[in-house]
Amino acid sequence: MPERLRLTVRPIGRRDPIALFRRLQRGRWPFFLDSSLPDPELARYSFLGSDPIGWFRSRGPNAAYATPWGESSTNRNPLEAFGEFVDALPWATAGTPAYPFLGGPVGYFAYDLGRQMERLPDEKLSDLRLPDMHFAIYPRVYVLDRVWGETFVIAPRARIPYEPPPIPHQLCVPPEPHPIEPLDPDAYVHTIEEAKRAIYDGEIYQVNLSHRVALPLRGTPTAAYERLRARTPSTFGGFLEAGDHRLLSASPERFLCVRGRDIETRPIKGTRPRGRTPAEDERLARELLASEKDAAENVMIVDLERNDLGKVCEFRSVHVPLLKGLRTLPNVHHLESVVRGRLRNDVTIPDLLRATFPGGSITGAPKPRAMEIIERLEPHRRGVYTGAIGYVSWDRSIDWNIAIRTATVIGETAYFAVGGGIVADSDPEAEYRETLDKLRGHEEALTQDRVEVTSDGLRVA
Image (cartoon, one colour):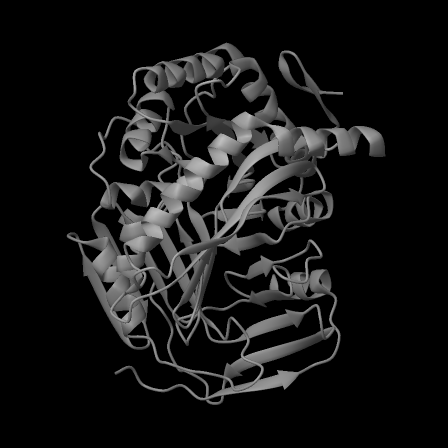
């Protein structure tokens, strides 16, 4: 059994999240798991911290970690190494109310970690050389409670004396990557046509295809994130400093949440832009709710998620309390479903990842073949995009997003990918236009340019 860690919870009154975020930039590797969009169910808490006391990182078969409770490196099984990393952490609770995150590892799983779960062809260059997993251990966290209007500091009662060594060079991100050129509009439309051909041939029912752009970051990543959250507030957004790269996320989608043995996923499928007038906005929302194409896509992904959760949940515990609910965000309307279950007692975090990762909403169905087609049609590896960002709390609660609407910043460049689900009756031109609707607000926030959607793509106005 892991050792017990005794925590203190101290209220410090109301704190402005941005002022606290800026203050923590003075520390090392600050993070901000940010629920900036008002939502009493999904956005009650935000979490901030800095100065971690340990880390875990992997790329391909190689993994290493350094913590006060042990150090290790391996070139065999990174998922098992991550399980050992988590198992060695101390256990802690913090009484009532039970805050969902008490401190512990914060980080991400890149989409390319899926190569450890599925047998995929290895045909694409990892042009950004990002890790497959990166987590850092934060002993002291700030909890912003939107309902109570209070900020709390949660920290160990005694200081943990440990100075982690640097991350090994072979697991670091190069400061000057050599990115592959982005797909032009015609090339992206061609990938959609190829995906539809695979659907017609009976290989898959649905697949998510994406394209990536490289955007010049104006100002600091911190300032860019502040613009991003102001322009596109989200329930599962965040800023993560990883030393040699940064993540700026405005994700609206939950991948997995675990509290005790209860597990939930919230796949999103179906998108329409917001209207320019209230009447147009309502028309677009009704159009999304009435769309047979989007409904079919949503149901297919819900079936996939039910199957994934069924691998690790108690028999007959998996259920769907919400199917195709309208979710309205500042820039788009979405259809969201909710799938829940109860985990078996013997399920570990590596077991959970093997059963569910990557999320079905950003791969397709059937998942293994959809991932093979993604590998064939997209020109480079996805990196963090469509992976998952979040935490593992001291009490082993987890909450991970789907890393969409997420920029990876290396140096002064933000790499930002957008995509959409392709089914048999998808209109390739309309699908491309939908990705631009998703991209426009984020590009404006990151570059500070005014951007318009045109028939040829996005144009700086």
